[in-house]
Amino acid sequence: MCRSIKTLRPPYTEAVTDTDMRAAALQYVRKISGFRAPAAKNAAAFDAAVEEIAASTARLLAALEVRPPAKTSA
Image 1: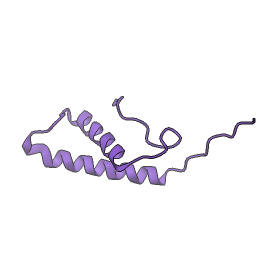
Image 2: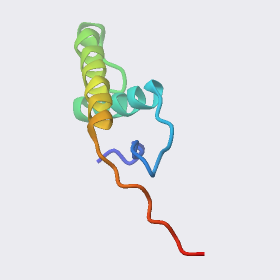
Image 3: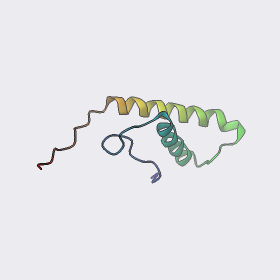
Image 4: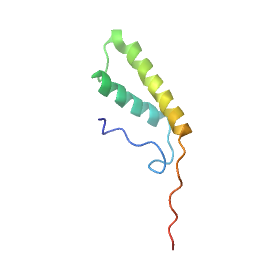
């Protein structure tokens, strides 16, 4: 779907920022809505969706239990 959205959980990304989560949310809303930038009459709904999805992303990432990478024998 949105190939420019990167995986935000470890081990793919170590340090995820609010900016990373908001960027992913923005790409998602753009894809779903079909608007790169909404008209003024839709801006509030567009921005609210981005904020809700960014917040949901933060909650999801905080709740995930990720296994540590396998230790290699050396």
